[in-house]
Image (cartoon, rainbow, N blue to C red; front, side):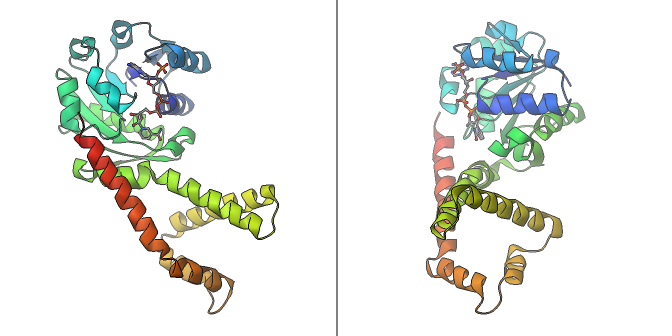
Length: 268
Ligand SMILES: NC(=O)c1ccc[n+]([C@@H]2O[C@H](COP(=O)([O-])OP(=O)(O)OC[C@H]3O[C@@H](n4cnc5c(N)ncnc54)[C@H](OP(=O)(O)O)[C@@H]3O)[C@@H](O)[C@H]2O)c1
């Protein structure tokens, strides 16, 4: 793996660094990070053995790839040192809502630009990251991108036109699942279980159901029907979800997140 520079050293950069090191895709000596205050970069360097750069020049020196992992609103005030500093380098952004054209205008001398949307299960290598590139990637750059994103879990190349929907589904999705899990735990307690029992049962039920869905390849509707006998317990529970139009709520949830992603991608 070539030398990688991380602009930002927060949650997402840390997940990527930890994944790269755990999967031995890169050595600590190949990775450098930089943050404005130096606080998070020093923390990440101390935790992983990578280098914390003291300046932008030091960050970019010898790097082949720049990973942009700070907050999207910071791009507007990007230090001009990044313009010449990324000449001929590959730039990969994980910022929500920043389009490939916007990346190209911020780093105009880079050799190519990749926009990626990871998600937080990437912290344990169980994420899914969708990505797209401004120009077709060379075989070498494709290998760099897929190894880097593969450190977070699965990766999927998709068209940029799908990015707002992807953000609403897999980027924000863990938030919906955790909200569902919290509500499920509270309901389990209301049904008479102790908090620890409730949590164990909910976590294992979510994990097992997701694995069954992935492994069998059967549709969620088929698997649901296999647990639902006419007038049985699941039938009674599902009747309540149906009466409350659970599916309409979820559709509105995803569409609201997609609309917000579209709004954000129109900001400079
Ligand atoms: N977390 C998610 O679920 C998720 C999912 C998909 C995409 N993303 C994207 O990932 C990006 C990073 O998110 P995050 O959750 O990792 O954020 P975070 O934990 O808040 O980290 C932000 C980092 O940016 C640094 N920083 C702040 N100002 C800076 C500046 N002017 N120059 C250089 N570094 C600066 C901070 O460093 P100091 O505080 O040390 O200054 C910190 O290391 C965002 O663009 C977000 O859209 C996140």
